[in-house]
Length: 538
Image (cartoon, rainbow, N blue to C red; front, side, top):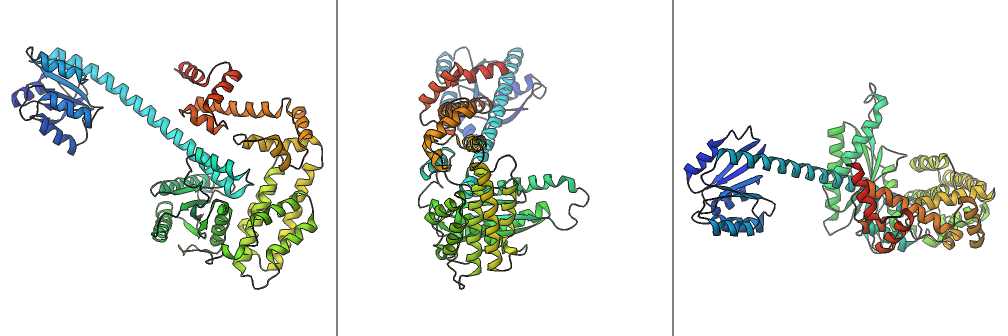
């Protein structure tokens, strides 16, 4: 049903028009009436906008032309039909110049009104369908963007960084500029859904639906607050994390309100418990991993009855021994299969000081497990059992009964990771190439170079170049180009993203260079490629 506003200073004329046809059968209703343009503007401010306005041109207070002009400024999308007599030529000329949709001559003839309304109904339905399709496309694009944002944040806190500038550029491309600051102030929050005993006895096979409901609720909650970014790991669907920007002095109250309401909504809507962890505030992009680890530590100490689970204050200041340089050296000991050097680094990190608080000891353990996981992801081929094992170790770190047990466990994990590295690095070149290609397949949107890959996987650049061409059948450069342009083709087909955005997302800093490369690869430019896809889909 489409809504109409009828404007005429003569009540008789309005009643005559209303009596001309069965408006409801035609798909319309007279929702609003006004005696002049001024009254009509006042009604438009107070009510839902109508789909169509039918207005006389000769009226007191404010005539139809002045009204149309005012609507053009405030409500440019309104469809306006003008009522006029044969002697109103100058009025009609002015109305047409202002872009009125159509006109009806007085006295209104039933057949002309019926034809006009039929035409309007068709146009309005087309408009609604177009708006609906655009909204669906916007939702799809937003979901795609949100998914890429979540994947990137998870990569930032869990994986080895390619380099800081590349990460910052990627964050800006995905509309995460507020996080891509060297002095960013933020906090991490971790929340886990706990299903009470007996809750799923009758439908345990549909636990996935409960997980989905949990994620949707948490994401919708985050959308209602500013500067909150959710993300999660597929390996633990009962848990979700949030990065929350520190905006002002009211941050603590803002954070407390958010987590309190989130826990309450989880209990109210899903009928399950939840365990919360609030990480320490971080200062700087390089502390993202620390912020995540501190929220995991706080979660490990939380209970279903608390909404204030936090780590000890100033913990990050007490973990200075785990600097980026120390982290780099620790990674080298693992990838060089040097257990003795690893043990020395571990002793340096924990310093042998028995006065180190247990929560700091546990936090450092979490950071090292994150490092193990990043290395395992780089070298593990085929299955991901080692990554799953390391994730479980991270989840159960609170269960370790002593510091000695923690150190023993870290050595056991290091042996497993080293064995995975050894199988890949010191076996056939084919396995090493599989690991490298896996890495390239996941990171092709960054500025990858043979030199950076050679350094990352401890190979000679010239040797890597030959090995890559032998394995992939094409040069490294051609392989990356193919990945980027294949992904671009998918984005052109599945989204309405701008070409400049697609170019950035697949790794091209210049949209013109992207267009040139795309045309060379596909034989047509990206715009033409998209237009042909849309034409074929009709």
